[in-house]
Structures are given as C-alpha cells and as structure tokens.
Length: 461
Image (tube, rainbow, N blue to C red; front, side):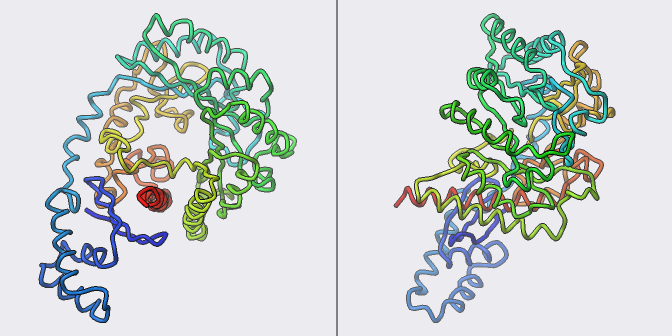
C-alpha cells in the first residue's frame, strides 16, 4: 500500500509497510499512481501522452523511470505487502503483565476551573482528594513489582493540579531515589502543571528531579483566559507566564513542553503557537480539545478545514524558522524517518491498560488518565493488582488490526490505531474510530513528514 501527496513543493510517496519515504519528480509520481492497476504498456503510453509537449522529458526518460519504479518494488521499497497482522496480538501478549509507566494522580483537585476540563476540574466525576504518602509509596512498589526486567520506569505526576500536593510529591521522589539502586531501577519523573503554584522550590525540584515538565498554556492571553480561569472567574495567563519563563530558563536545555489546547474558539491555533514562540518557548504542543459532544468548546465540521490549513501553515513556519536559525519543536511533528518506533509500537499502540496505567489518590488502577472515574474500566488497585482481567484483555487485544476501519488506512502504522480513550468517548468502544481525530492525525503526519523531508534534502545539498 502506498500514499501519495504533494506538499511544500515536494511529490511525496509513502510505502506504508516498508516505511520507505520517496521524494520523486512528476513523472515518477504519475507512474507510481498508475503502477499497480495497469500493465507497463498502458502506463508508459499514458505518461508519454501526458508529457508529449515537454522537450525535457523523452520517451527514454519515461521508460527508465518505469524501470526504476519496478526496481523499487522488487527490492521491497514500494508496494510492500503487509506482513505484520499475525504479530499484532502476539507481540502485545508477550509484554502483558509488565508495567513500565504510571500516571500518578497525586491530586484530584485543582486551583483552576477550566471549562473544557475532561477531568471535571480535577475531580474525575468523584470527590476531591489528594494522595497520601502511604498510597504513593505503595504505587511505586507496585510499579517495581510488576516491571519485570525493565530498568527505566516512567512516572507522571498528574492531577488535577499535582503541585497542590507538593510536599508529598517531594517525599515520594526521595523514597524512589532511596530504593533505585537496591531494586535495580531508574525512575524518570514528569510533572504536569498549570503553573499557579510554581515558585523557586518547585523550580529547583523540577529541574533536579524531573526528566520532563509539561506546562499548560493555551497561547494568546484572550484564548487562555477564556477557559483557564480560577473559581472567581479570573484568567491565569498573567500569573503563570512569568513563572513558566523562569522555570524554562532555569532548566538549561532539559526537556519541557508547553501544552496548549485548541477548541472551537481558536481553530486558528497557529496564532497561539506564535505567541508562545514570542514568549521564548520553543518546545510546543497544541492538542485538540477532548470534551462531550455538544459542548460549546467542541471542534465542529466547520472548524476542520481551518485546522487542517493551520497544520500546513505550521509546517511552513517551522521550515521558515529553520532557515533563520530559530528552530522550534512541535510535539506532533516529531518523527524520525531513519528509524522511528519499532514495529511493536507501530502495531500495538500506546500500551494503556497493559504497560501503562493511571493510579487514583485511593490507589485504584485505570487504563489511563482519560478513563479515571469510569467505574466500568477499573482494573484493580495497587494492593491486589489487576483483578479486572477481562478489562485488561480488552485493552491487550486493542491494536491497529482490531479496528476494521483502519485496515485500508495509509496512516495505520503511524497512529497505531489511535487513542483508545478518544475512541471510547466518541463511539462507545475502545476499538472504535474517532473519525475527526483521524483527519487531524493524517494531516499532521503529512506535514511532519514533509518538514523532515525538507530538512533532509537541505542536508543533502
């Protein structure tokens, strides 16, 4: 299977199952489009007719180009068959029961009252609570006990607002550091915060202990303050931006990213990215809102062409700033064309419910943070382990080939079937397909690949 598209002045051909990316001239692009469904004589005749008036394209050029396409097919770099389906369930079964990451909900409460919050302002449809040190330690012990031979373990401090439980968080990290050597493990922590409680102590802690920090900022002040307000209705932009700038500067190049949300109010989200860049932030992400159908912030069909155009303009901006020596990173455009994710990741997905779980302040286990509060998806708890084996089996079977709609999609080995939570909340099934999200993902992938092509072509020159 192949996917062809034209973007940024390039004719790009993706061979889906080999992972090959070809940048070709117009003749090759047209030959490839006809190649599978026509014999050589028909293809050559049609191409000769199309380019009959071109002095720079001879009949010999067309014949040679056809031969090159044929050679690429014979070498497995074009029209490669899909041989991965038999592996899909098998690969995931091999890692079942081995947990590598936890999303630790250290606070089911928040000091903001964001209207679009999927977590019900941090409560997750339940009671406000903060995690005790006892529960936190047991969660870390659970992770170690269920991590098998894995050395690196990932823990994301999440909420609500995790800094509302900062003292416990510091003690918990100290506990983890005290047992790493004995247990043969290495903890890598991420902190996700809205920024209101950042101070020098937080900055010192985050830059010393956290391999990554995720900072919530929606870009333009008027957009950010429309949704990200306190309980008195006051916007938070002016309070948090200086704190974020101070933290990022102090990180000295360590990983972070600004995590924004775009909604029906700002499908033109490139303006928000430009504001973040002007503020000095260069590691960026803008995510489409996750909300209930009919919510005022929900992205609509009318928003879709605007958003798709924004992704293209974002790619153009990245290329422009590359040329100016002012590069920046956009999370969804991070792709390695020389390697990229292993085939396990490509066909099995994110690992929610199997390799990755969320832990509530009470120690309950859920497949990921977006399922917390959905009692039907409770997996068990950190004391007794996974007791909801039928639920885990459902997630274990959740791979790109479990979705019939994905079988003929060119992006299936890039998205791995998409997000199970988005699928469930839009279709009622974790193996459903969130079609709006699919359209966004495919455009992001086209743009991301084009940007990388441009960079690689520049290196070749």
